[in-house]
Length: 149
Image 1: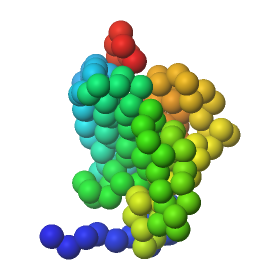
Image 2 (image 1 turned 45 degrees about the vertical axis):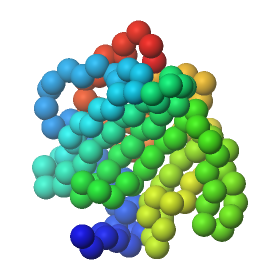
Image 3 (image 1 turned 30 degrees about the vertical axis):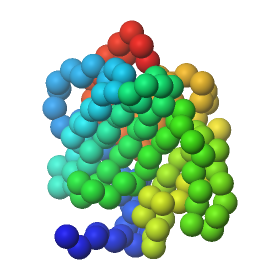
């Protein structure tokens, strides 16, 4: 399968576009070792996105929140509770860190979590809410917090 590449302008436009839940289903925030993928769409329903939530199997502090376009292109991913990330330029970025699509690198480049958008990196639920806003999901899916977030 050929790899899909976006220009930086295309990726930035997809990140910035308002995203809406595709249904009114209620979802339970994933527990230990679980994953959840939820469909989203643009206001005109012509563009489709996925919201992924993954939790670590052993360490509950480990996980990721991810927003994808075209099924396979990671636009934004927030990794937390895991190992540092080494960028292609050999710079090490501590965890938590944010991957934002970068032309020529896809999601292989990470930055420190911007504290201007993520107000409490120790609260997983607050990080999720901030991630929703960061990805411009203006009508988020209904997700119940659960006991062990």
